[in-house]
Length: 192
Image (cartoon, rainbow, N blue to C red):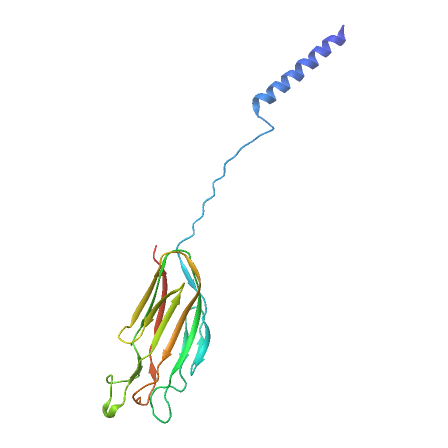
């Protein structure tokens, strides 16, 4: 009669183990929820400009912070008036939100270092006007004449080339000898 007791004990142990496993965990399915969070701060990035369409100009790239446009022969030797000169700069820009692009000139013209006024005696000038045209996403802004700043407001994210055209028109008055300078600042900033 020993065999039936062993069989009964084995059956009871098997039932006990299967019941405790079922109460502890469902081994066929488990769920965990993981939440992921990230932040993309509003920002605009401009990279080094590429120069093209250069007429009477030389461009030195100083990286994403700017560059130098030089007019090596600013004046015509026979008239001493400014030669027509121009350059197109393409700045690769990425803005991940609405943004404002502004351009401003410190002097509003190329002005002779040490100049005493807008015009010197004898019909000579100590300044030479120039124009800056911005083109961005089919919008334009112009700096020149009486305006020393201009802006383009863009209401959504965008990427592409910001085109900056700088043009010195042919002068009508001779320029006093010297070095003529100005600084143009293009600023691209998020508006959100």
